[in-house]
Length: 122
Image 1 (cartoon, rainbow, N blue to C red):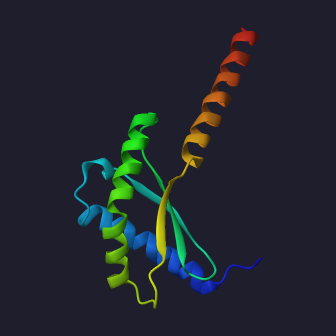
Image 2 (cartoon, helix red, strand yellow):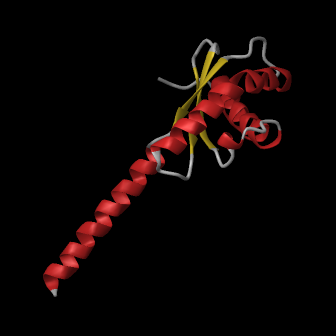
């Protein structure tokens, strides 16, 4: 399926604006250090899933961050409504992007295999 150009532009704009809103408007310490990694908007522009990553691997930090983002959702959506030039502001939900953690885990495993091979060669 070919992605609609308009949807792609809107996703980029939402990502840029949410990043800015989190830095400048949201005062909750739980959302500091959040990086917006991507946005997916449905074809009818009614819903947007915003993917984020955090530096910590701890489950407690992830839960706190998710709670902070959930609490800030209303403010973020209102800000988006005033900043974006679209008829209806999409409902937004935040989901942690696990691809960064997944990539780190693969790196760890590859390094482990490499180390084991070096130990066996010695």
